[in-house]
Image 1 (cartoon, one colour):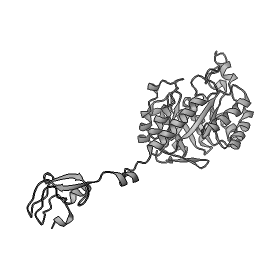
Image 2: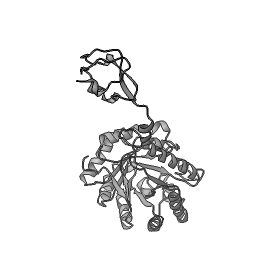
Image 3: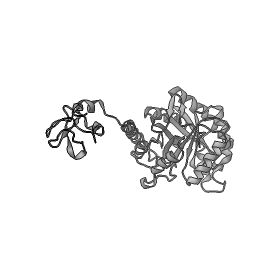
Image 4: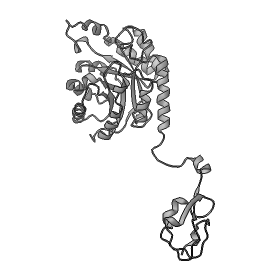
Length: 338
């Protein structure tokens, strides 16, 4: 998987593992076939601190035959093609990224016309090779959800995209249950993805009702969080019940930011205050010793450091001979040695 890039950039935002989390507010069908409400969701997403607002572009026929009882429900929730440019333009005005999930190859052309920031591949389309082929041709970043998949399915999809010369990709752990119970989130898959696909940024597409789970994912290095957003969880419609209302989304964002700050640096070093006020240790003789005694660990001890050799230099004196007599509790100094 070496030809994938280890970071992607969207509107000057760098997305990489352990980097500042890129948050996607997934609207789904929660705009309730109302353009003004769709625009309102754009503004709400921006106000809540999301980096991107995402919609879905599908046809009912992508999922069901016309005689299926669910066909009309999905037909009613189709996003009108002529709304795409209006929503996209409002996103540009509000300086928030616009993303969309196409559910068939023939729909990609509509997203190409409005020059979407990136493409999201829904979990159900992970192995839709016609769709993957068409999206790969656009040379835009791809966010790939992996719900309903085995590890081998993920590898199969990634290998296909790699052969199509896709360079910019984010891999999202996902469990496609609505809502997802917290014990089914399997956040440890984030570690598996990071270890197995070292050059690919990893994130979480979360359908749980937890405001904490995304922060836990960030603590594992996830750099993208996707979460459904609704104005009211009690509204009728297929996506409202497991989405975050604005207050919960706000709490989630705070938790994400705290987790990111807590991650800090991977380089172990002393803090400036530790350097200034931390207790320093030094090496002292444990007993009276005669000249030419060879120093070993059982002849010295550690005490609060004031003068002499620091404890972190202890290996420099082991097996060396002292050139004079020394007394118990006397600090060990460089001048003691030949």
